[in-house]
Image (cartoon, rainbow, N blue to C red; front, side, top):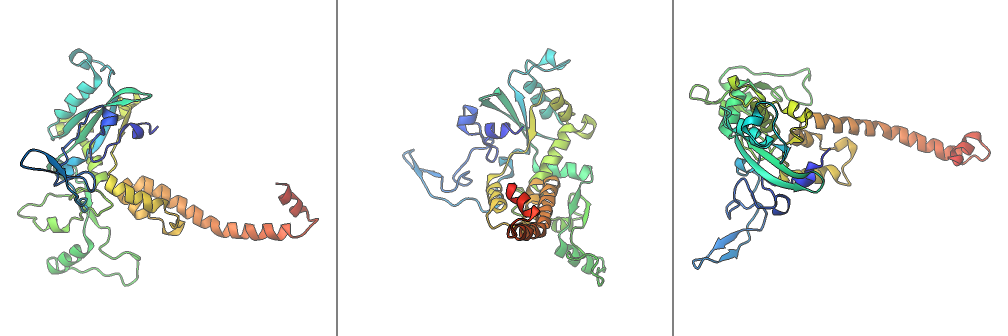
Amino acid sequence: NQWWSSACPIAFGTMSEEASGEAAPLIEPTAETPLVEGEATETKEDGTAEAEDVEAPASKHEPSMVADFVLVLRADKKPRGKASKEFDFAWQWLESKLSAATRTLDVEVIDVEHESEGALKFVCVTAPAATIADYADYINYPVQFKPEELATFSAETCKLSLSDEMGVTDPWGCYDYIYAAYEEPNEEKAHLKDLWKTPDEDEGIHPQFPSRTRSQLALGIAKSSKKHGGALVKVDTLMANGTVLACFSPNEPFIHEKLEAAMTSTWTMPWNYPVDRVRAYYGEKIAFYFAFGNYYTTALIPLMVMGGLCLFSAASERGDIVSAMLNTY
C-alpha cells in the first residue's frame, strides 16, 4: 500500500523533475539554504554562475521547506455531490476547501506521473508556525516540559521541590515526562517559552513542535469544522470512498537517513535498539511495534541457546529416537 513512496521523492517538500515532470519546489533552494550538501551557486558580475562548496545546514532548517502532510488524488477524479457543479476535478475542490480554512493553511498542488496509477495530484499542506501554535493552544494540546528548567522554576518561583527517595520514578527523575496543556507565551506567562521542551535532532527540523506533532495538528485543522477554524475535510471518508488515495507525512532526509542507518546497523542488538529515536521521528505506535519485537527477540535468546544444546546433545547419541527425528528434519 506504499506505492506512493516511489512516486513521491519529496525532499523538504520539493519534487524531483523526473517524478513531477517539472520542477515545482515549495521554496527555491539558494546558496544560503542549499538542499544538498556541497551544492550552491554564486552569480558573478557578468551574470554567469559559479559552483561553490558549502556545508549542509547543521540541524535546523527553514520550517516552510517541509509539507506537514500530503493528500494524493487521481488527476481526473471527479468530485461528488454539490461540488461537481462548481469544480471539474476533486483536487480542485479539495484545494479550495483547504485554502478557505480560517486557520491559515498553505496549499500547493504538484503533478506526478506514476507508472501504474497514471496522472496524480499531490496536495501538499503546510500550516504556518503561528497557526500550529494557535491551534495547539485552542485544543489544549499536551506538551512536555524541560526537566531541568522546570525543576529550577519550581524551586525558585513556586518554592516547591520534588524528591523521590523511594525510587518510584526510576530510571527517570521527578521532573521527567511532565506534560501540560500548551499555552502561547505572552507578557503574563513569558516564562513558558523557556519551559516548553523543544524538538531534538530526531524530532524534526521545526523549532517549536516535533514534525509528527505538526502533522497531527495540521491534519486536525483540516478535519475540524469551520466553527473551530478548520476546513471540514473528512479525510477518512474521502479515503474510504476512493477520492483520496493516500494521506502521509513526507520524510525529512537529513533525519531519516541517520535514523535508518542506526536501525539497520549490523551491530544494533535487540536490547539496545534505538526505540526512543524511532518514537521521536515516527511516533508511539511504530515505536511500540519495534519495542515489542525487540523484547520478544531478546526473550527468545535463552530458548535458542537451550535448544542448540539439546540439538547437539541429541545428535551426538546415535540410535536415539530424538536424534533420528532431528536428523530426519
